[in-house]
Image 1 (cartoon, rainbow, N blue to C red):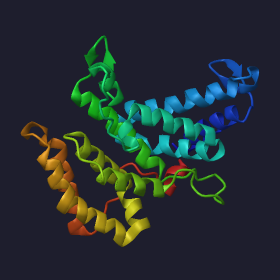
Image 2 (cartoon, rainbow, N blue to C red; image 1 turned 120 degrees about the vertical axis):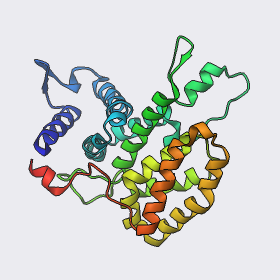
Image 3 (cartoon, helix red, strand yellow; image 1 turned 180 degrees about the vertical axis):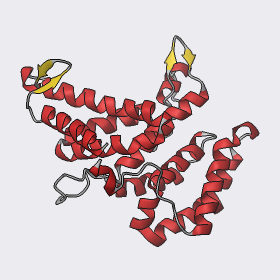
Image 4 (cartoon, rainbow, N blue to C red; image 1 turned 120 degrees about the horizontal axis):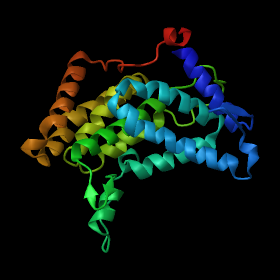
Length: 262
């Protein structure tokens, strides 16, 4: 509910502003320790990324309430946003976007970690689980860049707005595609903020969509084996529907004005 989200936002904002906050029966304040504020900023940013790779990866709609709170906190406390990006880029290099190359002397285990895989006791996580986590983090990022906290001061610009999404898309299309990963990330990103990018960039956006369909999808196909076609097929269907309709649908779960009255 909208009222519940306001409670969460106010509590986080009060904590970061140095006020005393009640949590689990305790009164806490960042002023209780010289590094209190820095610690809270770090752990809070880390927690938001964990919501992306956990909550959002399983429940796509949850990207929007989480993103709108982070967007508002980022506006008032830029340090949280900076640390959030650092955590996000480390956990999901594709959010930069960046495909790390394996350097000489880097072990396979270390390289897999650089690519975003979880490695425990030399055992690498399953590909499906890896893709799900990356998907959740990209969806959260795509939601953040288009949302603003509705009760904030709208004078300034969004701290990390749609121009960053436009840049992400352009940079992504300048990279050589990877099997599985590239098709999934493009689909997630366009499903979540394609509508907002379409409204903001108009004809330039549609030129990019045509480029993806005509030039980039064949390049993804060239590196994709027959057993990895799932994400690519979904991306092709999405592109076809959008280009035929000349419209990107609003993402499922977007917060409407009526949500804030709940």
